[in-house]
Length: 592
Image (tube, rainbow, N blue to C red):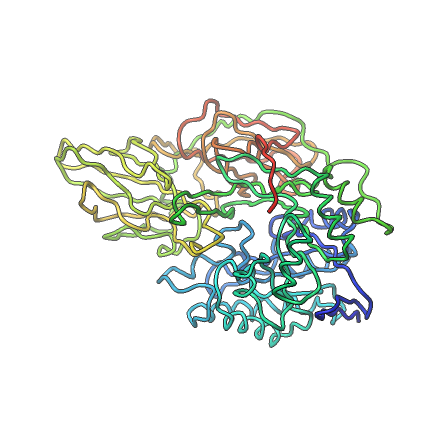
């Protein structure tokens, strides 16, 4: 069996110096039918290793219910990487960041109480240990010590950016060893004194994360921890937030920084080599500002990341620039001679219409009666919408309806008529005059991505504070949790007339299964399903214009397209199929 080892002096494979040339590709952001294609292309680019996170919230969606199959079969992914001639690095968390909802931590962790996260507290360690008991067997059998391809396993993730509980890190490291991890363990943090001293263990390989000035960064790291130079996250691109520009990093500049590391003999992991997609509701978010949550910035659906291999697997100029660097003196497999074919341009008319509020009998998981608003977590729900209904007495004048702790956006209806859209970033109130005895207020609350980085990881969704009319709390709610995890239950053909969010349906006819790109000009905000699969969120705020439709979701012939528009009627009840992706106006990412 190959022997991979790390000492303070060297990284070796079978007793010989080994330079890890790795790239990040997350199996949970790419459909399994496409894993092999992406992995072979990355091998042809010159990588000898791939790296992946493990998202706890997908593998244990409810406490004690585990899933390691289908789209999230980690073992199959590692086997396909080995078949492509690639070693693997696995980063099992429990926290992964990754611009992924809640940094991968399950929403149910805080269903009952605000338990401390990412520290040596038994209320957090107990579910972590239960998860690791089920997860680790799926990776230990793939270690190089057992004939597989896994070289290294990470302890936590960028922990020094969050906390300083070294007892917690020791618990995780010892737990991985006790469960059969034999290959070297490692940590990864920014090369600063704060991050390294708070996030590393003396006997665990400490690697660095950065995007520029590698000689300077490695020198900073060496002054704090004596280990072989390894950039575990080389940020050759960046992610996007709604309302901002699409980030790009020039290929030549990114390749020059990569060459500096490779020529110095350092190991490196490209973050990302292939980004993939934040399907469904799983895109994360950031909260920034002087008070940490002044501005909420949700991530877009695409995780293209301006990576060398694009979201739909196309070879970019950055791919060829990196291949030139990584392939020096090496014989590489030939990459594909053609780019992926895409669906021809066209238009899909959405001829059927169905009001969401007229379908709560099939969409809700059960009406909850409560004196005060409940969060999604308290309702046993991770994602989607919640509909809160209450009656406000009157007559009253000169008062506003105000929502405290709106996470994250709400359409407000008064006596069934749309009155305002409230947003976590503002506005959070609307005038509410009550001329008669009372009015019915309905709030359709959308949960967008949970913050995935910093002290707000673990936030709750829905209405996390209260609803006020003037200075008075509004009490007495009927709440319908609407997780939207199965749109096959929609009763098409039902007569509906309620205002508010509306489902629209049409048929996309396909002669040959190919990747496609859906654009929604004239639409405002919502979600798109193709044959029951949630592609993710669209929003006129941008920057992303098209949603990626992977070919495995399609079938030859008729394909169902469902759009849920949350805000207002679209300009036209149709969507466009485009031949090329459009991720919006670009701005150059300045690497740090």
